[in-house]
Image 1 (tube, one colour):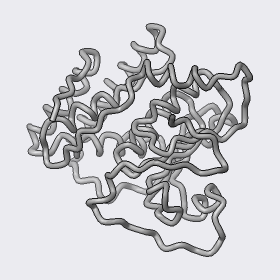
Image 2: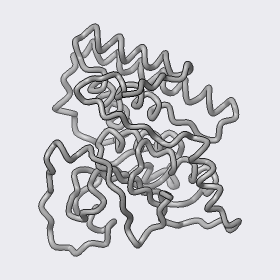
Image 3: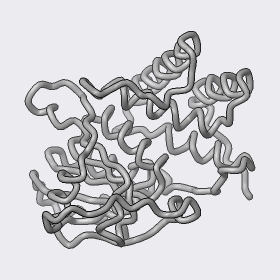
Image 4: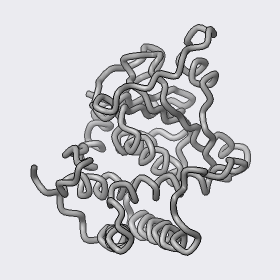
Length: 255
């Protein structure tokens, strides 16, 4: 498997994750997932405590430092003229190319290609209030590239990989996107594993927030019948498989 080398500006954040993981005997990819969950919980007002959180109080300081480094990283790059920036995608590709048990060797579309693909779909007519979806969102790069050129739309990210969904939630949050992210197999409308509403109150309050999506909200979002569907839990071997598809009620960005 080819090794993905983390860009130099992301290495301080990568070092924080790696040092904490090795010092405490944790898998770095698991720590990365928990770091994303830590960010999401911190921006989820009213959310119950995370009972599955396994870290001690003094270890939480490491996650606070990771969060601070992420915010500093975003500030530096966006202040330097970048329209959007996704450090999580590069960090994830590096972690998954290290040969750990959870390695999947995923490689996401480079940012300049995302920008190019969005420009290719530009008709010159700026629309707002549209529902724009990416059914294989990865770290949300295509949605970010679309968002900065087409403000005022509702973005929908979907992926069968939970880590990808968590990255997309965090990326949409910090870029001021409004929309939702769904963890499911988009080819199976009953396959709902989890979901998040991103910045649902941003236009009213200006405050970035995240809210867990309920099964009822998922059915309404998919325009599914109101009869309750069982929460489908696919086998672990299939949860991280990439799938491709789209829903007819929304425009998709994949080409």
